[in-house]
Every structure is written in structure tokens, then in C-alpha cells.
Length: 171
Image 1 (tube, helix red, strand yellow):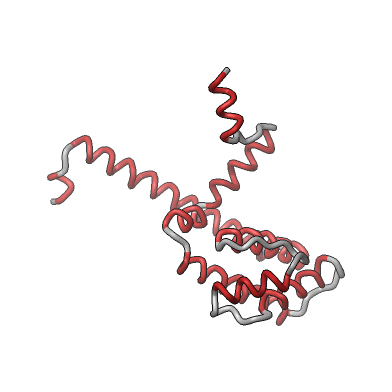
Image 2: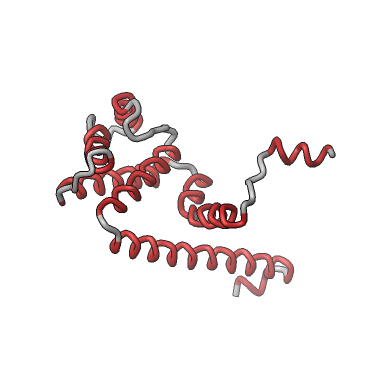
């Protein structure tokens, strides 16, 4: 038995780490199920808004800043230059589809929803393959950050920045 050969203090620390990772994984699975159900019950406009939120988060992790309708040609080119698996014009097409729904208040066809979904899945696969360990962990357990932001909003707390925390230390 490998566990019995480890010193008692290290055993406790190892068990604590395993317990924390287990809690994080259970939370991630529950969050995934909750988001999946929320997405399945949502009407098309809410689904589009969820896609837009994801599109703003994921490219930021990949080092590309984007905003719907802003410099889409440049962003499309950057995405293609960095990741050749994404075809030229794919991002432009997805932006056109999302803008059609958001700004035009039009319902999307099923093939358009599949196009957006396929593009998002492609970005997720690229993210899994190109992000370093820390970024993959942040992306995997992003629900913790989302929960903390909700708590801050409900309680009226503001997040402390490094600058604010330095001021507090000097007082």
C-alpha cells in the first residue's frame, strides 16, 4: 500500500487535496448539468445571449479580444492566423448570424444554430489543446468565479484590486 508508506502529515494533506478536487469536480458537474438544462429550456433569444457570453469568454482565454460587431474582420483573421483549423470567414459568419438574431430580432433557422454551436465547439477544442495548465483549470472551474461574482452583486461588495489592497496595507 503506497498510502501507508507516506508520513501521516503528508497523508492528511494528500487527503485534503483529493477532497478539494472532488468537491470542485462535483460542483463542475452540477454546474454543467444546470447550465445544460437552462440552455435546453431557454427560448432562442436566450440561447443566442448565452452563445454571445461564451464567445466573449473563450477567445479572451485564447488571447483574442472580441466584441460582437466590432472589428469582426480583424478578429476573424487573427483567429485563422493563430488556429488554422478555423476556416477564414467562420467567425464572420457566426457574428452575422448572432447579429441577425440580436439586432434584427429574427428567429434563427436550425442550421444557423448548428453553425454557431459547431463554431463554439471548435473554439473549445482549440482551447483544450492550446491553453497552459493554469488557464485550463480556470476555464474548467470557471463556475466558481461566476458564483463569486453573483455573491458580490447580491451583497453589494466590490472586488478588491491589487491597487486597493496596497492602499489598505499602508493605512
